[in-house]
Length: 353
Image (cartoon, rainbow, N blue to C red):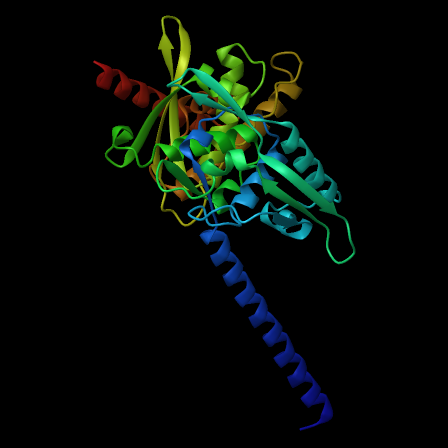
């Protein structure tokens, strides 16, 4: 064998070994990510608190570092690279974000609702924190407060366990809270209906617990809070949710959520956000371009849904949009959308009667 051939053989062997190590790492990392969980007492899940998404991420990651069946073992350390990798973060100030998140958590209490005594009990999440920005690896260290220990440690019953892999993909505080509330109902017999889990949650209850903003109108709450959270949960977690507003008189006072646990091997596609209608004349070229772009988004989304599940259907409002947008571009798509709208409405009317 020539020296050149020997070198080539060594290079190939070296690269194959490196690839093998990398593959093993990926498998093990995926295994450990799947195995990580967040366990909170149900009282804590139903508590009121307002944390930013990074603050929630710190709490979530810290909760994967201990066994909830055992006692509090003291300080928990989170390093910057671990935090970035766990939540797929790529910005350049992750240490600053991590440090600021811990500072924020120390300033924000939890409010527990004692229904029996009609009391609000305020507790601190953590009582101590340390930060270090060093060359060998920046990190933060934190210790949960003694008052919150009964809701995180030595848990025997009345708790909810969620998979960290799914929770880590949610990037708004409300989507995380809603996911916890829904999963809490999964093992409650009163919420079961066949394979589905059904739970009704009051709007004021959700607002008080998650403190999601000063939205007062149902339309704003639906568009800015409920819908974005449902889209994330459906596309990034193990459950598929449908919902409807529950009226009391003329106003919506609660939301009824129904969900099933998915067993699909890939995520359900998320509905794209459509382009806003430009302030142009009706029938203008600019309006036509806006319609064409939105039509393309909706048709692509419909195709992705079909690939995910052959029985999945677009919301009827989106079908109406397809019918409107395609009316001047594609007669076949236009007529097909109108036909499906008519059939679905007829079926709904028949069921209602």
